[in-house]
Length: 544
Ligand code: G16
Image (cartoon, rainbow, N blue to C red; front, side, top):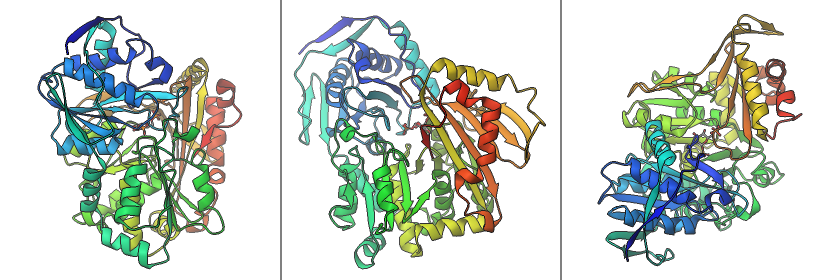
């Protein structure tokens, strides 16, 4: 086996987005494309020689090929040991567990998360640092800088490693361990939640649930936890076999792409509880019988009930949410007397807060919630958190959320996505809104008056780093908000996200339909941003 050096030229489109580099599979399949990015990761890491890395992915098309390439490149770049997920499978939260448990130097996760897979779908790669979390911006910027000047990469000439069995191998001087990540993940979950109580609810009561893994990575983990350890009946986990193309579906747990689960939960004989997770297992959607829990509300309810959950009984140090996430959790934090931090979109911004013990729970409107147990968001963790609350309180999901609204008031909240619109139009829309920064303040729109308009920037309270241009906020005098930003995870054209929020303390008005309650704000957003004109769409692709 010898190390060979391959000459290459930079690609000009390897800037990581909100969460790693995401492109179409065919882009990654171009000669040298993956290799350039992987070598740039290695080039940007100091002191990598002899260290341990974690490697795996969400099982999508090109996962196995990419793993073999990365293994050979790691061996050629002096990595000491690599822990690889069995069959190449590693959910994003399990990768975080493996990095932390094995005190690895970092990890490479192959995933395009909720984006569709298959030969015509998307692929992605992200680097996680030694705390188990996504690389912060200074690391991704260093990787990007290397992609722009790369001239060669190193790779070991060798055969492939058998990923289908647990075992230890040698690749040059590097040790390769193929590991089943379900085991350490399950052990961590058992330490955080009252499995006996949940098991009792699943076995002895008339409680029923359905977990939809959308043919993505969580299938093996969900089966081991719910049908194995917790004794739920076979069939509780649906779409539990990971497929390279996610069965042709879109592995995004929301009301549109997980519609078949939503239909089950809104049918006559609906189970008490439903949940879904995404391509790489870090997102979650929570449903009750005939009831959808908005992710922003989910974070607030989890925060308010954390004292009932085994691993969080000692109390929370603080909470954090991304800027576009509703302020529902802020109200709970105020009552608990803890800090609530507001960060830009992207899980990487929570890492410092968690490391510094400033926050215990974090969450985002984009169906992500997690805690300080790892440094990624964690879909199945959120499902277990909810099950633990349900088992303690013995009430339905709907009762729990509605009593929460009664106590704290309801933050009506919705996100309108316009996916894959022309980039030019999306940029023009943003410029058009930016051009109104001087004129909008104080302007009245029906019942609403603009208090201020700005572009969100964030100063990290731990390391002082500053991140600017994180979304336009139009905030009204009653604290209602319209937020406009472009997604950093799409791969085709641009995806416009419009976030809408208003607060309703009056219990008699809390049962309104969300879109109805936000109707006036939706009209104002159109008036200010001319969404239809710039996107050339009459309606959003996805409404959450
Ligand atoms: C990623 C990030 C999240 C972010 C989401 C949406 O999630 O980790 O923090 O909220 O993308 O980002 P955007 O609005 O820029 O598309 P995932 O699950 O795709 O890794």
